[in-house]
Image 1 (tube, rainbow, N blue to C red):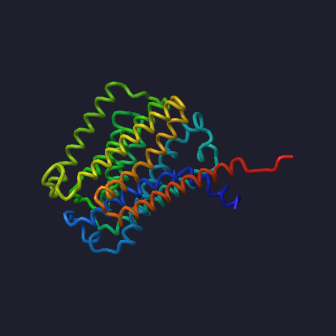
Image 2: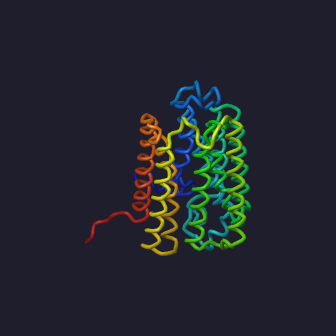
Image 3: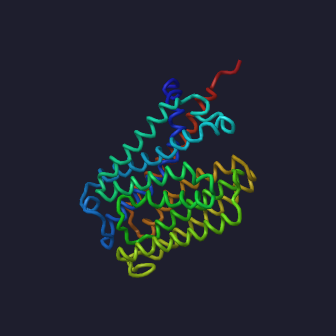
Length: 325
């Protein structure tokens, strides 16, 4: 078993698979939301297709794009990682560049194949997101004003792959906002370079306002008749607001506990990913859609347990238990 973990651990590190379930939760949210609400008009494939097939396709598409971005990031940062993060799989030689290139190509192909269950719109949007991921890794992450906003747009675009005609778009706005804020927090707390300047903050805020307005406009074009339609319970908004405050409290506690540094940044980013799944649960709890809540809840639990198990497995591989003498 340990030999198998030794072989798989570098690949799992490379693809960041332990956090990828958050992307799956975003996609599942849109699939289930479209299916349970008559006011939403998704593609025929989503409205009439088999639920298990849609969830499976959404999982493959989400994991594929997530792994594509993570693997591409490490390939492009290989030289920099050798100096600053020598323990990463590519920098340390645990994974060869050929293997990483295979993962990049294979994960992109898997993402496109997974998106086919949502029709042509899903496939085209997946290709557009893959292009945005390449732009982010090539240049965006080196310019905070652009990179932070682009990262938020990638997450937001990622979740609407199943239904590009989504009417109630506030979940998309929330994902855009949350991902941008978490990325900015991780950047500042970890002390990444270049630092986020005041101009970058202003540019990111203006960009967020523009894209939020555009997303709401798209929702209006798709049939959103009021800022908060009657068929969406106010309790859904209350639950989401509570979760936002809870994450703010979590960040405050971690900063008080660890201060600024890599450890606090890692926890803020890792649990920031978990919050996407909690948001998905929150929307359905507020709508009293308990069947969908159960599905997303099981995914959240599986993701949390999987994330914990993988971290423990990594620890056992790197520092195996031995009897003391």
